[in-house]
Image 1: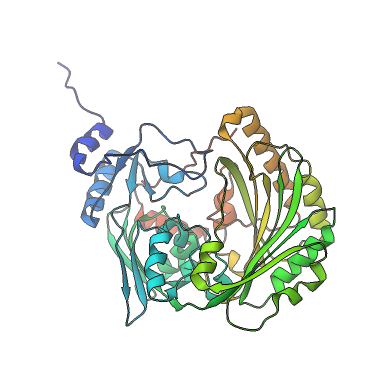
Image 2: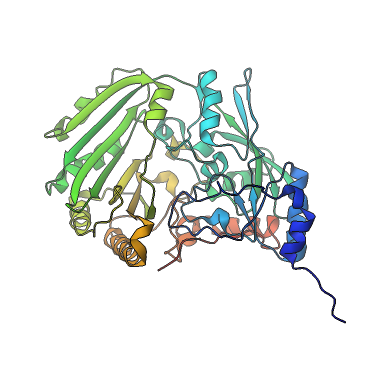
Length: 453
């Protein structure tokens, strides 16, 4: 007589029924190109002991795990495990007034953290999207307009608590597991375990001067080359993004500049760009620190997108920009108003001064981070998606001779099979050692949920 047994997933649901998500309607991905699985088993542990129980069960039954906070991973990798661990209950925020140390749960988002910090007139560098989770942002590095003056988000991290995929409760700091702590600050989240708490060193806020410029592109690659050098050579308290964007069926191309002067100095930012301001729509505004952060958010129109990233270690110059802009002009329009283009994000300053050997290597010494993207609406169908994929593949080939092979872990791209090599090649051995130590059963699933057409 056959004995009926339930599957490991069914057994998991029976055993952890009280921890299963009751409402998964809000569980989604920032990038609509991500395929959200209908049969995901979402669990919402309330404590570190719950996490240990879940991890041990998955070890015994060969079930993979992924960790979900806000779904902002461009590839939807947080939704790729047999079991998805939501960190929403790890959301406590505390600020110590005497030490100025911020303590946050691993499931917190940047918006709620900034609400607390704003009350105390302090801050940490927190990227350009307040909806993202702090754990993923920090463990991938975390770049913001404030990074040239204060470092990346991970640079202010002074302690991290996690439950590893080996089932250990681990606290990392500069004195406890310092090498692993160094690695994980920029080596990426989701590989080693579930972050339950993080502590950050804060800095006092100040007034900020915002500036922006826009030009209709008329084939002048020299303008972009000039802006590139100004971006690279600016003082560390001046940070900016230079970009080019093409939109609509008329394929309008615009050159954009946005940035911040991060102190109360008399630095004349308009004079700094004086040789570039012909036919420029220029604006400046003085404001408080948090008004500046709220006004500098990266906004999108939604829909689907693909992205590539490469670090720049020497200027591309006129020749590089000329080739890129000629290729950009051949973009096939879609109905997504975000269109396509690129952004150059200033690095240097405190990012390069950080003496970490492993964190965000090799990008520490980059002049800037370049990202290239294209977008469409999912209702435009597979044909449009395929065209956009092919277009950005070719764009990556066009820019390859002018930029490095190294990519930024927070800007992943599933179509590049060597992406892990591109961002981990200088720390690969360390990454492998710690994955074997803290994920001996290979529970972590870092698989893209974007179809590779």
